[in-house]
Image (cartoon, rainbow, N blue to C red):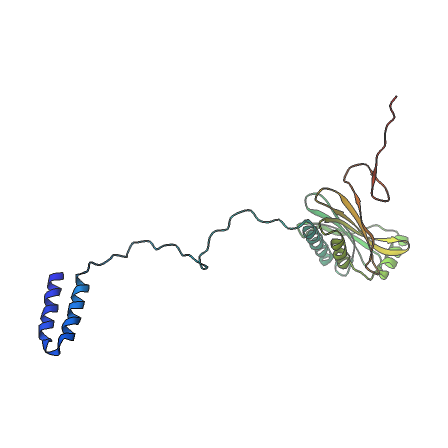
Length: 232
């Protein structure tokens, strides 16, 4: 094939000889290119991309979130699910149970309480009416009317006070005749902190008193006491 192409190119050069040496030079260049063996490229895998556009599969294990954020998110999700199911009610109490379940107490503005159970952000039972006497309903109605700081604001204050902990319980209660949000916060080492937030001013009235989990009897200062048995 190369001999035939060479003959054709040589004939073309003779026919164009009157055009000068430039045409002959170009014909020789084409002849040299035709004589070079082709370099096959088909079927050869291309090299993987490199540089900023290259992508590599992710490795390693996912990073766990901070305990405080996880605890607040779980509680918020459960409380919001309960309040959505009990339209018009206000949160009174929420407590963590086993198997990622939450027991939630809500109340209408007239003091009527309802109970719900929430698991994985969904209501699994309730709302069911609580059997409260008229005196308890009147007291709760008064308490709810005095609240200025709702449960979400109280929760933000609690997680800011003990950021490394997980909130397992939040309750609206009365302290010295005033509404207060009380919370239990568990640290990664098992220590429980009790935090109280004034439901009118938003101030922490009990900023994180600590109680070691299942060790001794806690005192008012949060220091466990032990009882020694005399030996004979």
